[in-house]
Image 1 (cartoon, rainbow, N blue to C red):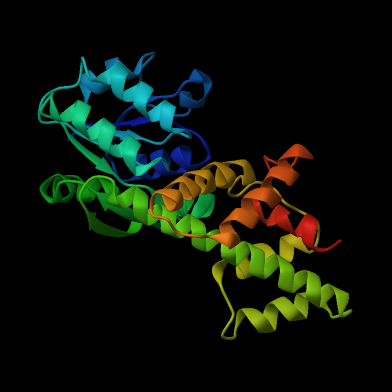
Image 2: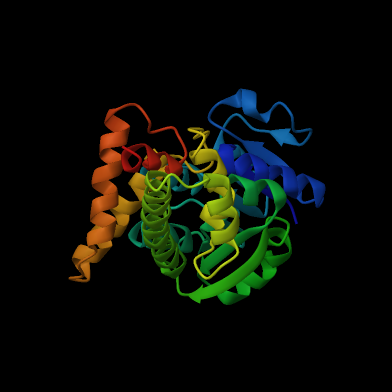
Length: 280
């Protein structure tokens, strides 16, 4: 099976490297061609050329329109029987639109967003939530297992993205809780390293506190998951909530906080930069 990767950003680069280690990757495309230089596989100048040369097309980009533009680019050249797997975080509607376009070409489409951040992408330890045809997933599973430690089939096309939206809403709440709690701890004049150590091992311990607590209290917010990207994702979640007639005040508050931080120039920092607003 020949596998091509489109998108070598913070997440896609780590995933592509793991595909190389597993012996699957045969082709890459990136809008900024310089990022393809480290790979000894075929580097294509156009996504449609890549799609014509492989059996599985993997996509990892930032925005809904990026995904739809790529689908429009490759639909004319992709081979019937191929599989397109989108690992971006976009709306369920975008996933369904892509699936309809590709179905006309006898091409299967899976929406397979991931969770685990840059570290997970680098270490092949992502969680992947997949929507689409179960048989297509099983055919592609060996490839996906090179990037993800857990792969769960969620249902029809769009259900993967809906599950990722759940994840993003939960991340917003965890971010709010952890940054607020650490600001509270700081106000109590506690030794912050000890607070993080003991709380991480108790009932309120979580990945975010364990992996971001020590850096945020030092004022370091190097990008792990960009705040501006989480903002984009939460806007998708808000739209979905409106359709479901559901109130999500914590998500709404996080969107407002992120907008303020972005206006102050912190959009490219990790989402733990929310601590900037909490600590006062």
